[in-house]
Amino acid sequence: MKLFNTTAFFAALTATLITVTLVLLGSRNLQNYDAALVAYLFGTLFAIFGVVYRYSVWIQRPPTKVYLKSSIRTLFSKEFIQCSWFSLKDFVKNILFQSFIIKRSKKKGIAHLMMAFGCLMAFAITVPLTFGWIHFTLVPETGLYPNVENIYTIHFFGFEMSTFPINSFVGFMTFGALNWCSVLVIIGATYFLQKRLKDPGLISTQTFEADILPLLLLNLVSITGLGLSLNYKFMNGKAFEFMAVSHAFFVIVFLIWIPFGKFFHIIQRPAQIGAHIYKEIGKNTGMQVCKHTKKEYTTRLHVTDLKEITTELGFNLQNNAGDSLLEYSPEGKRDLLAIAHLQARQTSGTYFG
Amino acid sequence: MNQYYKLQEEFFVDMQRCIGCKACEAACAECETNGHEPMIHVNYVNRAVTIQTTVQVCMHCDDPICANVCPADAITKDEFGIVHTANTSRCIGCSNCVMACPFGVPKKVEEYDLMMKCNMCYDRTSVGKKPMCATVCPSGALFFGTREQMEKLRPNSSPVNKFIFGMETVTTKVNIMLPKGTEVLKVF
Image 1 (cartoon, rainbow over the protein chains, first blue to last red):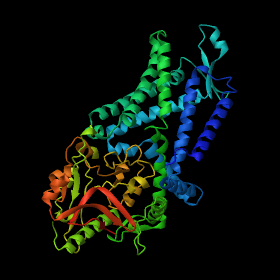
Image 2: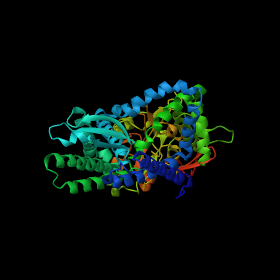
Image 3: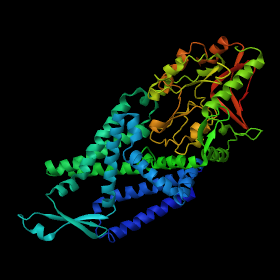
Image 4: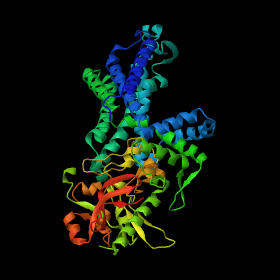
């Protein structure tokens, strides 16, 4: 494997520069930028660079390239209409509500859903804030008199969007949104953490950096985040600096860890939709029948593509007659081995030895 | 945990001895790493003409084709040569591994949209125990132990871990017992 991938480097650099430009545009040349968030901004920029780099390397791998090409081909073909409704349903079912995890285990599915919703909502709130795309201002007249209700204005990319009284339901939900996200994440991540400490199957295969660290980070980010609210609401801001620094530290470690560890699956997961579309589109090419069992086992498109992928990866599964092992179903292949084994025993003159 | 893995113990399969009792299947479902789904395959070879059955565990290839064709980097091989089942957070359920494995081992569990396969009972082998299937096989089709033990049990057989599929030679961690002196088995 190459240590440095030039294509990926330039893709990552371009994405990072585009983000920096959008930060300058969105915050009106940093005029609306909250300087307290600058450390988070650098963490996010690093995460963007890393994620795009890893994603670019990933999609260059022969098996991944096949799915990418197929998805792009479908996007610009008549088949797009055929599969657009299917894709939308699939997205809602498997990405939004993650039904495939719920089927594996209800508890696990619900815990994962809480964690996923908590994280995604938190991203949706914090990323535009960190980029300076959203900021709040107090309507000056409402701030002058103690008896007048304070009104806030939301600005997006420097444009006024709407106003709301700070002591209203909208205000409560807006400024408390990250707290709700934290609660969801803490419940979900704690469930998985206790599973990882108790389940013998998980204990035998897990590693600290791949499985435990992400859950610890999610909990630490959420707990210190909740701590900030706790601090200014109930502790009159005592030890706020400590809480702010520790929260920033864990968030930045979390952001830096995204491209390397388990969190990258958030970026990879939509490929599942691509795999489903590929299967659906493949049916148009007909089904492959196993040469041994005479039963259908996958689409012809899948077999054709796998032949290309295996060849590109340096595996030659073709025999002298030009037949490919890939034209046999999994059951057919197991039978081929058993037949070869039986023949070897028969040739030796004894069935057992 | 895995410092207890006994590298001197190996898996030996003799499918000619398989009687199709499926005790291994029931035992396999006890494995903690499978989420209680049996991963071992027991099937008739050609039921119309013979009662021959075959048993198949993951062969744990040295250069696993399943891992190579995985578009999601979900399959990994560890320092003991164990090719692990798909990482649940990465697997996108494409079935590339299912179709490309020369031994027909990985299973796609449609309901979970996940590939699952035998990982040689890693919860057991990583603490020095034997895989479930090998502990219950009544006919000796599946055996887990040292080469010396196998040699005593099957003096007229040789363990083979080199298989030919077309132009490809695949070497594996798991051995198949073949007539004495055999070094390679041409399958296809």
